[in-house]
Image 1: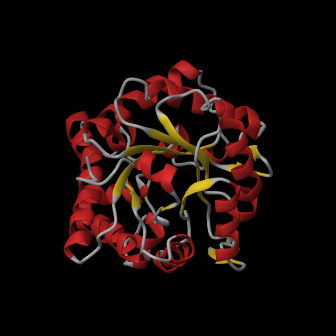
Image 2: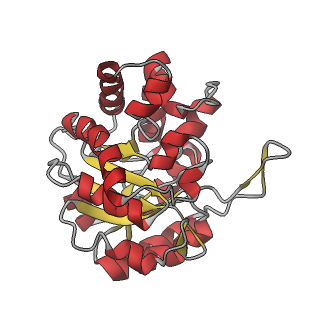
Image 3: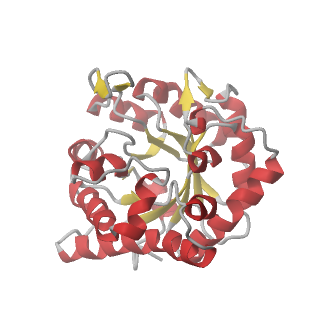
Length: 310
């Protein structure tokens, strides 16, 4: 496993808060990489893998104990559209886990002594479509069809032995049900994280019903939300803790808004230390950031949650 002699992540969550990383894409873009591609950050698994390892390392050095791999948009179907065959696609997907492990080794060589873990990202079906539908859900597919889509990639990721599978940015309770079926028997724990708006999934389902799907899933060690506004995370954290009784994972966006006409982010961040403390008080144990949340913000999270180790 990626953590060497470190305790399991589930045990760590029972003992106290654990700091997640921030947005991988914004860290890669800040280093000068163009991600305007259907594969998004997954393209760099083939074209510039060391850039991915450097981005992970930046978050470990900022104070994160968990980094999420560059496999969010890495699928057999997506790679096939670029002419990549299934064997090479599987190797690239698996390499995302090794790159995170490499970053952990480099962080330890630079003096980071706290436990470090790798979370293998599995994004939703809509991420493969690369048309924004991961923020809508309702793809017109059955739960069984979605399970058959997700299972092969999850098998590859699980075989690479990450510490946890990150079933993330899930817009739809139907897709969550498919993902929960798909992780059964893989031998790797998982967290389930919805993208939400206004107290519901992006597909419009009540969060109580969406979170309840994971309450009895032994594979799931944390349930929560990501890639949403920080203010939408507040009530969601409390709901996830109450409905499931599991540790809560929360990693929202910065709170800025994308202006498509101006092609620029507008507004200020609402991702603040006070909000982080509130999430922890409500039951969050795995806390970080998503889009537009960089290493400086994660360093602030680490100082807030684990001041003795930050």
